[in-house]
Length: 331
Image 1 (cartoon, rainbow, N blue to C red):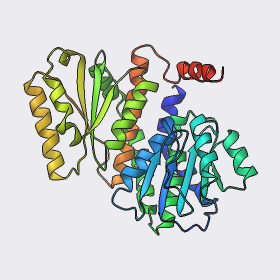
Image 2: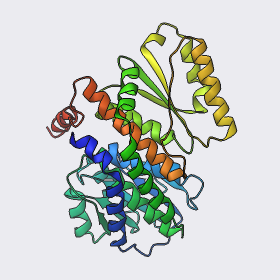
Image 3: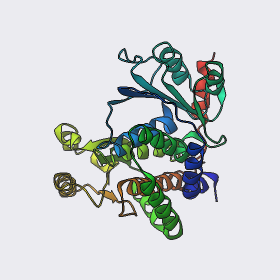
Image 4: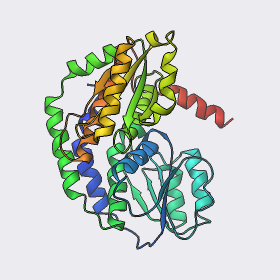
């Protein structure tokens, strides 16, 4: 079994390990009025998107996600800045960190290694260290769950039961997952450009994750958007019948969609199928709490992206084109 697949299947143990890492971390006694999450890439940005979706109706503080070399002007001493780079070497995030150090002392760093860890020692910044040796996109359990627990602690939110349920669900799914079903999805999207649609507050973050994973693991381009946003502009693009044979809409659904979102998904699928467009729906394997459903879906789409790469003769782990870009950036 390839290492990328093994990392996905090991998610229950990785989540447990992430909780243990958090338990050994001393949370700084910060008070603040807003939060900024600084980081980019398949690990950090995916983590931030998932956090935003899960805490959508729970956060008591304004939260901004930012990726880039600079930071927004609003950042000040009342801002909690959480800076994340799995490798500790992400150029944009290191630059953002250098700017945020001059704006606030309320900084927490999450990393595995690299220059970011060195800066944390030099500046005496609190750092939560996660295990080194993963691909950043495969380290989501070690990035997401400590961040979730940090933010939850600051607002007295107990997520223990949700985390335990997620571990239990993923253990069960590991035993029952059908790789034939995974391959069936890969076969359906082969030769087409997936147009991936999630819904706000649940699968919006997962549609972005699937797009990124299809690029890195599957070595293909895709597109993502959310419902209802796509109903106000993008749906009109489907009137170009010349492009329809080359795309496949992929709907990331949930068993607990609010009625209007469910209706929008169903009507969109009905309209597309009436135009002769083949559609694909993906549901989480779990039917429990929101966190377990989100990671059930992530578990499934990650496996699909890996299988899709292998189906077409690619090594899912290979990201040599990114290495080439970084080399040229250093010239």
